Image (cartoon, rainbow, N blue to C red; front, top):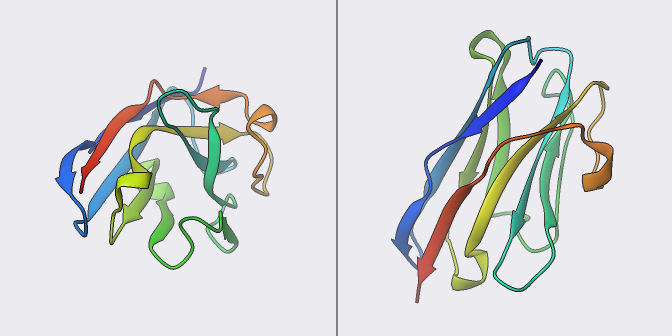
Length: 124
């Protein structure tokens, strides 16, 4: 069974950067597309970024385009989310997700594997 574990969250000031790794265990991540989602207090979970199984294709929400970068290292069974120029609106719990298809998706219900999430808080 594929298991995902996020880390790297924390409290930062606006304008700072964070990198969130998502480490997969149990099975290889190399044949699975992955994505990052986030959930702010009182709001629904929303799409952030997605990446294909080999990293060739990525997609981002308009809210993070140009500031966040999703990447992966299949040799390390890890997906990353590099977050630059953080804003208070980026505050929330960030979740890593994976699905046993080669292409990514912005739809959370198309992912079968989820991590527990990591809290990111951006102070203005």
